[in-house]
Amino acid sequence: MIRFTPTLLLLAAAAAPAGAQAPADPAPVASDQVRLEYRFDRLAGKVAVYTIETEQRVGQELHGKAQGEVRTWMRQTLEQRFEAPRGGADGGLGRVVVTPRRFEARLEEPGRTVRYDSKEGGAAGPFAPLAGKVDKPVTLELTRLGEVKGVRGVPVSERASYRDAFLELPEQALDLGDSWDRLDRKPMELLGTLAYHFTYRLDAVEPGAPALRRVSATIRARLEDVPPNPTTSIRLTDQHGAGGLVLDEDGLTRESTLESRLEITVKSASGTQVQRLTTRTRQTLVEVRDAANDPPPAPPGRARR
Image (spheres, rainbow, N blue to C red):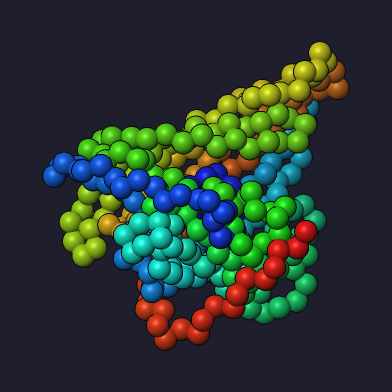
């Protein structure tokens, strides 16, 4: 259940702030409609294991000449342990303890290649911030629609990055072909803010055990809040984003894919610079097991200030 965004964020987890209220009971659903929600009451006691693989390419042109390309590949293996919802078996806030178990990465840039595997150890180099999260559990508390209400196990300064860790589902029940929207804004130093407009569409419902819901996604991006500069022009000159995911009837993500492409052109008195970013991400469910025989997770440490 990773938030469906063009950039990969490690999951963390959190306790809801004081006074958080459980969502109201959902409205009745017609027999031919589908309600998408995270059924934490039914997921409680299970552990889902995922791999999340991301490839990213960053290229640049200066005065029409290529300046080389930087390629990054990362694969993260993590566990999501579902606990009984707080506030009642059929409602309240779901609790998910997320523990990265392995982190593998490779960086290729002109003149050098850096590799890292947490299973083998050694210096993590540029991957140290992500490698440092391996085997450190964090806890999310969130509503049945995926809105994160709190984060525990990370410093206060990092908690905001986990608020969009899950895909937020629509409040209303859906017919086939219905869609819903989400907006995600990412500040970019010196360039402004990239506003991503996601449109999700319910494409198919497949009966079975479990029943599956297939959802497609498209992304439109805009560059906003560009700092005024009479001698420099900054424009988003190319953009594309699309993907899809499969949810089961309990809201567990079975698989997801996402591809995005961005091109930003900066024109100034010194010339034209073009920056291109291509990202591909794939999330795969490896197994779902009963947590009863697993050792209990270590309690999250007190957040550093």
